[in-house]
Every structure is written in C-alpha cells, then in structure tokens.
Image (cartoon, rainbow, N blue to C red):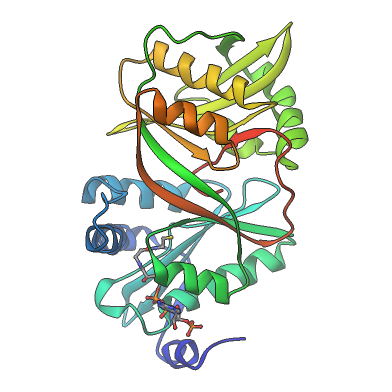
Length: 302
Ligand SMILES: CC(C)(COP(=O)(O)OP(=O)(O)OC[C@H]1O[C@@H](n2cnc3c(N)ncnc32)[C@H](O)[C@@H]1OP(=O)(O)O)[C@@H](O)C(=O)NCCC(=O)NCCS
C-alpha cells in the first residue's frame, strides 16, 4: 500500500535506472544526504568525501547484478536506491533523498520501486543494514514490512600483536569457491558467491582451516579509512576471531570489522582488545530469515 505522500510525490516524478550523465548529481545527493544525517546525530559520515561517494555510485551503476532506481523531477535526480541481485538474497542500498526533498515520500517511492522489482525477480528475502541512530529510515523500513533481526557493531582498530591464532589461515583461490559457498549455506542459510567473487580480483578473502577443513572465511575491502572486513561466515566465533587477527597481521592499517551482537564473545573480545565502537546498525529483513548457525559479519548490504 502506498501512503498519500508517496502517491502525491509520484505524480510529478519519474523513476528510471541511472544513466551515466546522472552519476555526478546522484553522487552529490548521496554524499550530502548521508553526511547530513550522520553529523546531525553526532556520527562520522559513511562516505569520507564527495569523490568517494561518487565513485561508489558510479561503480554500483555499472556492476553486473545491481539495479539502480533514480527518482527525477524535470531531469534532476532527487532520490536514489540500489538493488543488489547478485546472491540468493536481495540487498538494498544505498538509499538517499536530496536533503531539501526529504520527508515528502521520495524515500518510500524508491523503496517501493525496488521491492516491486525484487518481488518480480522472485526473491524470498530482501535485507538491508540500517544506521541505528536514524529514526526516519527505521520507521520507513518497518512500515514497508522489514523486521529487525540483529544488531551490528561497526568497529575500528587493531588487535594486540601477540594475539594467538589457532586455525591455519590462508588466502582464498578460485578453487575454494565451492567450499566457501557450502560453508555460507550451512552457517547463513544462503550462498553469497556474488559478494566473494566481486572482491577476489582486488584483495583475496582469507580462509580459516582446522585439520584441513574450512571453518571460516572473510572478505577484505580496502577503504580510505582502513580495511573493511566482511562478508564473513564461520563455524564459530573462535574461527572468526582467528580471521580478524590474521587480517591484522597481513596489513599494518586499521581494520573495520562489523560484529553482530549475536556473536557476544567475539564482540566482547574485540572491545577489550583494541577495537572501538564507531556505530551500531540494525539488520532488517523483509521475507524469510534463518538465524545463523555460527558466526558471521555482514556485507555492506546484509
Ligand atoms: C532515509 C531517507 C532515504 C528517507 O527518505 P524520505 O523521503 O525522507 O522519507 P519518506 O518521506 O519517503 O518516508 C519516511 C517515512 O517514515 C515516517 N517517519 C519519519 N520519521 C518518523 C518517526 N520519527 N517516527 C515514525 N515514523 C517516522 C514518515 O511518516 C514516512 O512514513 P510513510 O511513508 O508511511 O508515510 C532519507 O531521509 C535520507 O536520504 N536520509 C539520509 C540517508 C540515509 O539515512 N539513508 C538510509 C540509510 S539506512
């Protein structure tokens, strides 16, 4: 059901996929919207610079498996949303509305367009990470049928140099991808090969093994403020900890793991071992959801 606001906004609005000419304007509105909401709640903006936000928007508009939704008025982009269709589960975001046009139904419009496409494509589960400090996005997603399923701590720092690693940790090769898929399926209830394959050419994911058996993996994504860890899945929290410590040994920069509150021992260890909490996010799900049978870290989407 559409709200009266969304119907009103829709009358003068066109929603279409992003075209190359719109990249700069969409990058700007995304950067400004996320910066404004973060600063107004006393948090650090997700996108460190306009250039970084524009690069993210440009690459999402070109990446296979993503669909963009841009709401424009008189040719001017006012709102954007992205659907990640690379895996068994659909991902949402980034979703942003130009600051001066917020609160008039545009966020709902680009969400409804995305949900319609996800439904047409047969996705049983649509997921996103919501910045926990933002009451507007939480309310919007909740009203659209999303349920909160987990809370995630975005951490930054490095573990002590002498922290022990019990598992054997090595880099992932293309030959490992079937085993990684199988582990995702057993731990998370779904495969996420699309995520893993997308990062392989840049920085190889790390694998943890015990007695030659795969017990965990994590992707590593370099960003201007350190290496983002995830998506990851592991049989238990100890295997995920080994992966975090090993990632630190391999790169002398800050790490940015995103640890769920459903992994309490790992989270406590991280907060006692050199990591600080930057912010909390809510995992929100519309459709099917199985609680993980192990430990995990999300992608940027879920
Ligand atoms: C979040 C964002 C995309 C929402 O877009 P928007 O156009 O401002 O929102 P809309 O007007 O479409 O809808 C907001 C909905 O939340 C409701 N809402 C807003 N604040 C609320 C509150 N405090 N309590 C209850 N409901 C609230 C509105 O009534 C509306 O509900 P409705 O659609 O059922 O009428 C936009 O504010 C934005 O770009 N924020 C900055 C970037 C961002 O935070 N992105 C999301 C990251 S998780």
